[in-house]
Length: 180
Image (tube, rainbow, N blue to C red; front, top):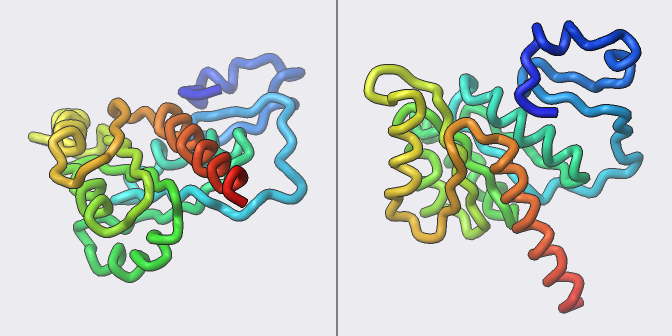
């Protein structure tokens, strides 16, 4: 389940509450879910510009975990502290798929697009104030990026970003398997 607010979760019947793995940060819940005993190494990176983008990043991370595609989080490494991103760029280059989560001016996806070779899914967030306009600035920045080949989902759509990342990774995995 996605977009499950804590006050709605609290109203579930007790017999369901016992079966739900709920995370209030991402507002997601799994029903009768058991994590894989031996998960594969993360092949998808979820990179957030700021810690205030955590709800959307967490939604993407939890969705990918449910799909059996663990993601490695890189939190609070946006352009406001560019050195934090640059310290991690060599590691980020190893991921075939990257979800770039950013609000405010939405610059992170463009910067990543110029630095890493993998598929980049842009997840603009409503984080910000003033001219950020509830995520519209970040969305427009992602759509207008001069970094070629970025894919963009709607504002705050962590679930959609995870689905796009999972589809891309599945095709990469299929190609790797076909070519030995």
